Image 1 (cartoon, rainbow, N blue to C red):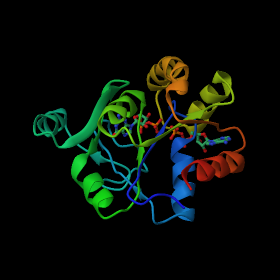
Image 2 (spheres, rainbow, N blue to C red):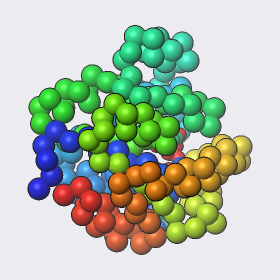
Image 3 (cartoon, rainbow, N blue to C red):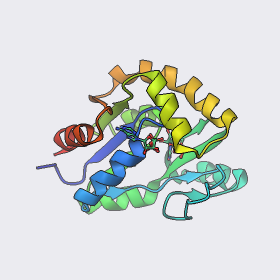
Length: 183
Ligand SMILES: Nc1nc2c(ncn2[C@@H]2O[C@H](COP(=O)(O)OP(=O)(O)O)[C@@H](O)[C@H]2O)c(=O)[nH]1
Ligand SMILES: Nc1ncnc2c1ncn2[C@@H]1O[C@H](COP(=O)(O)OP(=O)(O)O)[C@@H](O)[C@H]1O
């Protein structure tokens, strides 16, 4: 069984399927708490405030950084993203396990502040498939897709820094590997 109150970080390039895997994981294991990030990115049409993200202005984000309200934060493809500190600490204190779905720089910060966190990197079968998934998702502009792909190369090179690497080729198989890593 998973140790109570554990922090689990899931990282990987945009479009690799992190969100899909994490959603499925939560359906099967509702005892896991998924941290809801704060971002300066504009909401996508289906995204709901407080469910997918807390959408804030740059000023508000900066104030949160200054007040040390974020456990980690990073700039990604022209926007800022960060993990609100309080809910994570509260759940960990209650011995509940917390999932963070964040990018590489944030995962590196967590390595410093929470060295016992379990850090998992999700890889695509190949970069062409990653690009297809980003386009197929149909959520981002050409410019946003290009920035995500550019960032993806450096991210994939850092996969070995993580405790576990999982290739998301077949979704069910990747989900099973994710469960095996956590539980
Ligand atoms: N460091 C950090 N990264 C985050 C946070 N929330 C989301 N991200 C990452 O920011 C990147 C962009 O997220 P998003 O714009 O939602 O695009 P998507 O992941 O491709 O759907 C992804 O790699 C997310 O995992 C956060 O709180 N901190
Ligand atoms: N194993 C997979 N095989 C094929 N398509 C996938 C797989 N996993 C996810 N996808 C699709 O890829 C796209 C990006 O997935 P998403 O979960 O939004 O990625 P991320 O959260 O890492 O940016 C979505 O359209 C999703 O349905």
